[in-house]
Image (cartoon, rainbow, N blue to C red):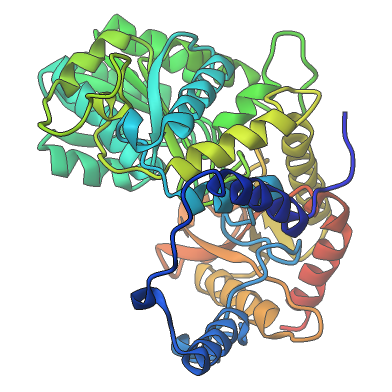
Length: 471
């Protein structure tokens, strides 16, 4: 079921009118003069604020004067950035006016209950009904929390992750004082199972981190094959699905999947001990909104603590009792709750079609680039990320061409194109006969996570061709 895209201003007005009515039921309170501001000062500050947000975006612009990139537009096909859904914007701004704190139930009774409901919905989507979980400030904190629990559950034994996994896993293990090692990735950016098995056989491994959507290539580790290996050697399994977790919606048994979509790997997330997910990516939420889930609710014992001034208003579980973080915005839970009411977690409705549009765009762009003479796709896209190299004679030339196209796209005021760069080892460049005059080169990367990218791909491919030919 679908309809027109809601207008955030109109929806926000409706929600704020409702809050006005609620506030009017309390004894009127006069504004305190200490909160007032000088009108002229306010006008000047607002003008400066708008100028900072909407200033030039070219690489030549000084950082202090550079404005925002047009994340809302399909011409922005760079990093994992896009505006939240208008429903999420309106809900967040409304709950922000209340400024609830979801650490304890008395900090925000309605938003705390909303958080419990959305966490249950997300856990069910991942195949983890009954999991213990909560929202976080983002994937980094969520992964830190999962690795903290893993340390306690495994006695601090070594954590393994793919060489292409997110760099923060090594950082988090350093914070936790846990040994960390990388396992080789294959040519497509997925964890090499032979290398994993060999390291597991050597002993001392407590946790294997598997990635459902790397932030570089969008690759998905073979989770369904890696989990049995980890279990055979007594290792715990954590799945970092911060980027790709919502694609689990499209991995249902019997559901039609796009070419190259690793449905089996996504289904196997249900067999993990812990999972991290970022609703502020494919869940259409404002930053920051992450989430962590534990298949065994008993791990909540690792959070045992007491507080002299919280947890008194209810005998129910307070979210702060199962969270590494303390204060957390109830607005994040409110925005996600309202979003999932109107865009449900379904393959054929709500978020499902949005995810499919991004994957369709990625496959279309990859096919067009493969058919061109100017680019070579590094690996077929598994999700909605496409990484591609300009055709050149040497590694250094690939690097230079990528940088030139990247800069030229942003510098074109008439028809700008915003891409991102990714550093790739020379032996992984998809260009046979390349002169190896450097160990690595920057290549181009496009994250096509907005549904608006689907009809935009023909123009995107034409712009890339024009930028490449201009060199």
